[in-house]
Amino acid sequence: METLKIDQGIFLMAFERDVDYAFDHALDMYLDRKTGMVEWIYEEDDDAEMMGLSAVENRSWRKRLAAQPERFLLIPGLSHGEHHEILRDFLASDWTDDDALHESVRDAYRGSIGRWKQAVGDREVVHAYYRYQERRILEMAVTFLSENGIQVEWA
Image (spheres, helix red, strand yellow):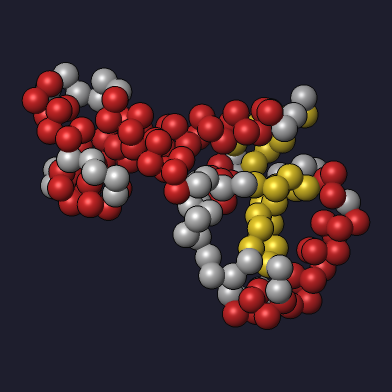
């Protein structure tokens, strides 16, 4: 297994994105297995330019990807369902010792993460969820990298 130094913030931004709602433009994100860099590659050069990347640079990245596909690892992102699964896991976890609070927060979830946060109305609970989500997504990212032969050294 190779060890690769990767910027944690940039990688997690690509890894945790909700691919079901992420972008209007066809975009894939790849990890360069040699440098540890995360690259955004648009399917269409016009889309790249609309998003602030030159068409020449985008085209160059697509050519590099086509020429050396084994060098680049597609970062899949998470589905909307996986984001809901993380919330459901949080709700089932032992994040609080207060049984009444635990039950009311769990009962507030009706299938929408945004409406759940509004229904809970407690910043501390929502922050506890965000901390849980951050840890869980980091674990998922490390597992994904490991399954693809990469031992990560976060930068």
